[in-house]
Amino acid sequence: MNMEQARFNMIEQQIRTWEVLDDTVLRTMGSVPRDIFVPESLSTLAYADIEVPLGHDEAMMFPRVEGRMLQELEIDIDDNCLEIGTGSGYVTACMANMSNHVHSIDIYDDFLEAAHKNLAEVNVPNVQLEKKDAFSSWEESKKYDVIAITGSIPEYLPMFENLLKPDGRLFVVVGSNQVAHAMKVVREDDEFIRSSLFETELKPLVGKEAKPTFHF
Image (cartoon, rainbow, N blue to C red):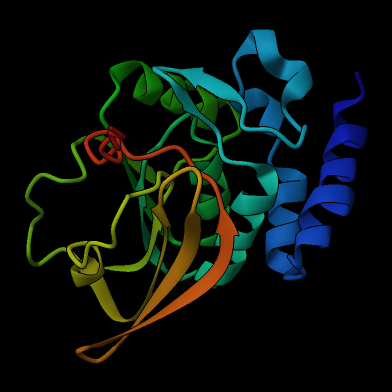
């Protein structure tokens, strides 16, 4: 399989058609080899319009959703970023290529080990990986320009927006798999501007799965 051609097709047929037109995002996703970041047995699916399984009932985001997220976050080369949900490290690598530094957390040791290996293979040094539960306590003085949450939450939680610096941007998907929408939050001084972006689907963050509904 020609991975270069597959990557080009992903950009032209999936990313652009989802209104991702930012040159930096397109250039980044066109240069980071996504096939390095998928399980070896699934390498032929690296550029497909699917959520590639990673284990632990987790999966990579749809490439088109990754592209929209990166575009909405408006990442600048001086930004310090937080990624909640490292996964295989693909989004981590994209964010790191666009920013000053990425602090990425996950709760699975094997994901972090694989991400460390993958990031080293594509020579991405400006990343700190940490095992951490996103819903545990955070250092109050630690603030970020950009926060990307790569798993959904059933209801909006303001705890993450409190980690934003002034003018900081946050991306999160809120809702269940059946009815979920992407949100962007921008901090303007002490005010948070929240806007709904588009409907999508995304696996939930561990610990915030939607409660089952019982019908009698």
